[in-house]
Amino acid sequence: MARPLPPGQARQLIQRLQQILPAGSVLHREEDLRPYECDGLSAYRQLPLVVVIPDAEAQVQAIIRLCRALDVPLVPRGAGTGLTGSALPHAGGVLMSMARFNRIGHVDPYSRTARVQPGVRNLAISEAAAPHGLFYAPDPSSQIACTIGGNVAENSGGVHCLKYGLTVHNVLAVRGLTVDGDPITLGPGMDPAVAEGRAAAAPPGAPGPRDVSGAPSGPACTTSAVALDAPGLDLLGAAIGSEGMLLVVTEVVVRLLPMPRQARVIMASFDDVETAGNAVADVIAAGLIPAGMEMMDQQATRAVEPFVNAGYDLDAAAILLLESDGTEAEVTEEIAAMEAVLRKAGATRLQVSTSDAERMRFWSGRKNAFPAAGRISADYYCMDGTIPRRTLGRMLQAIAGMERKYGLRCMNVFHAGDGNLHPLILFDSCIPGEWDRAEKFGAEILELCVGLGGTITGEHGVGVEKINSMCVQFSEAERAAFFALKRAFDPPGLLNPGKAIPTLHRCAEYGRMHVQQGRLKFPELPRF
Image (tube, rainbow, N blue to C red; front, side, top):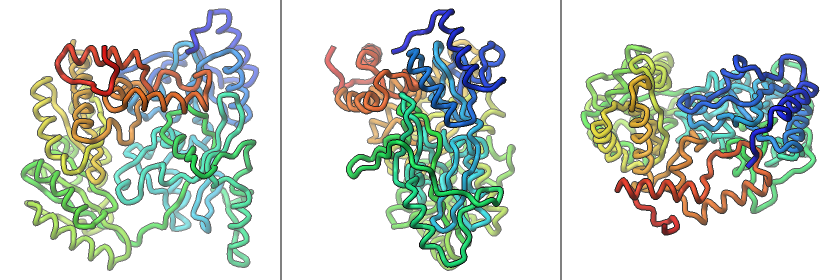
């Protein structure tokens, strides 16, 4: 692990960075560094030594090679909307903001792809693709602000991930730079030969790919020095969700999908949270795959409704939002089938959107659950875990018990279709002890996720927040495999160090703490 630079070497680093980048692109005064001290998980804060804001790949390459030569940690950063401290700076390192890499290279309606830089906002991709009748499917709640580079780092999902998948299912290729500053391409989507094949397959006289200004663009992407997409090695899949620990992404090729002709949403009310959780499993068991299926408990709906006026049933203990999209006939048939399952499962009320505006209102409430929590609580701590669908009700009942145990309230919003939980623990950091209780509350939720047969994360990543919880889920041998992959890409360990993968010593200490507290046993850890 790299150590903080002595003052003289730190000044030399800043001076050399100023030679690489134009004026205003190297920040090192404390007041300029403050906006970068944390990501969306503001409970963890750390000022970096310096912030750099490049706008060209050659600058990124020079910065990486300088950090490599001086043994300085480097933390890539997107929009800072992440919720696990994945972009937390290193005190003795460089934080690299990719905010100026915000160009959409082109949208290709024939191959249904878009080539974008990592600083492009998630929603901007769909906005650029809309004139072609296409959209980009992953839609995190922060999609108006989060960037595709951050989505790649965390393998983000969204309310429509049940049908359309996560980032890993919708990214065809990434181009980036290794810790040595060497360009690398993962996935076949940037091969110029592929672009030529697409052009040959286009109808005679058809327009070629165009960038968002309307000007013709070049091939899909220029090839990199190294292209790694060999059979048997899913390095693209490994890079997506790696939190900037393997490479610095400079370009992404995403898959676009045709816009559905129609979409409607069912709001289903339940007088019991466990019944609502079981209804989720019943829908999937019936062979129905909604475009989206979200669950909110009463605390969540009552917090959200005054904020957005979504039209939620505030008397229900829990509501489900289920969307069907496709042709008019497909939607009509699927809505009827889902209504039948929901009634049989115990729904007390069913309301189907009658217009696209009403459908968007239903979704706006779910997507604004986090800011709504900010209106009723000084602070909130958003968790992210995944459990089998059949255990949703059990988890909600357990969380109710944890509320009493820790003396804190918790709003619950779930990507119910794939069992991805987002409990929002409400607390006040100004009250001594509340943050400590909130943190323990969250850790217990994650431990229960593993106990129920799930995982400690669904789409938010690990960062620094869940690094201890990695000890709960993964064995020493599994963590060793993670480190081996990290070393293969980053032998000196300079890219986003200290995130995601816990050391053996850390897990041993965490295990001792839990055994002493009588909360959890770790059969997969070494005996101590």
